[in-house]
Image (cartoon, rainbow, N blue to C red; front, top):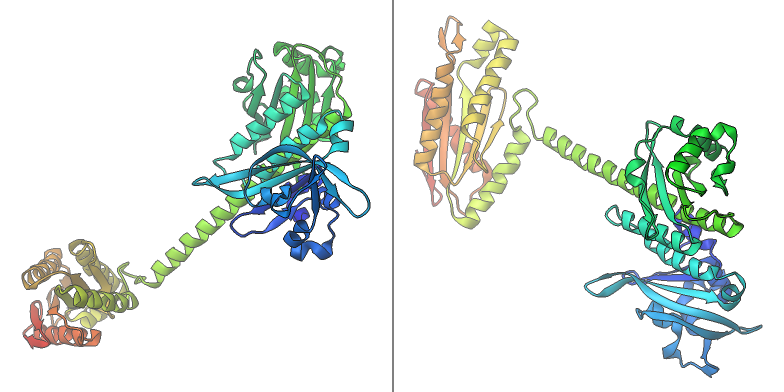
Length: 496
């Protein structure tokens, strides 16, 4: 069983005077707060076999012993929703009466994902002015906020404010959150019927607009005003603002997390004044801690998600860089080898033709020696751009194969399409008319192409395809360069 104190939102459950047990229906893990352990007299030695310890307990309903299959706690943990009912639990020293209820935290396709059981000792219910009802409802809201998602948090905060307003008998309850620039805004609001809403008027407020209020809140983490008319003289702006909103009494508690003030939870009395009591402040603090934990944990999870997303993108970028030629921006030899193997296997399975081109810039060493390496790099980039512009359909790959060599993979291309594409690439470089002024050349920069159109069989190897395309390239070079030669592979027999 997890140590509930390790989670800030579960720490709130530890402070409630009622017992709360919840079960993850997927992992079947059980969790309970300290009060539940105390009520059920469970110690740490029983935690590894918690369900067995619960099953060993004896319950009565209206002085009649209950059979094991009607155990109210186990029924709830097994998925049954139960309205509050009073049971007697036999303990070694004395019996104890408890109101037991259970409900699903959330459901998927009608099936509960988390079940929550609430144990309210009768002594609390009778002797605390009805506060156990508030604690029980708050426990439900707290349990729902333990793993709240960004899409759900506003609804759960609104529910908590409604609980707060109804149980404390206030006219308006609300949440303010601070922004990074030091201003704050009213982000959530609950109002009693007949009370005007103020949320729309209280956005992006600078602390200078209510200096006494914010100074007091930061110093004491609480602002409790029983009578607005009795505010001190240095709270003139606060008195004016409260009177504008017809507020007679105000109670605000800071929302803190890790020593940082995130905002505040508060309530207003409009129709009458309120002498704020200890239990009012206690309830507000509980709600404040619950909401602050939910906000902070959601921000933490969102931050983790953003970090994970950035890491995934960084990994994708690194993977892309690892498969990309740094000079030309097209794929590198590693990407070419992997893609050719994949496309060969796919062509064999599906029975379609696969075209492979090997391209070599003519007399490139002479070009580099005469014009310099910078001009040589520019020439490589120009050829890569011509090929990238020509071969950009889905599945086609342009790669830098070696120093001045490029390769192109064309799935589904037959002989006619392959020859036409190769000629367009040749003409594209001719059209650039890049001068090659070495005395042994003295003409435009050109390239030669070896073209292989294959209908591969299961026994065809990747290196065989490369070798045949390379042989066609050799023939183009031997025939005078600046041209294309082709090889056709059908049924394992080549036809040059």
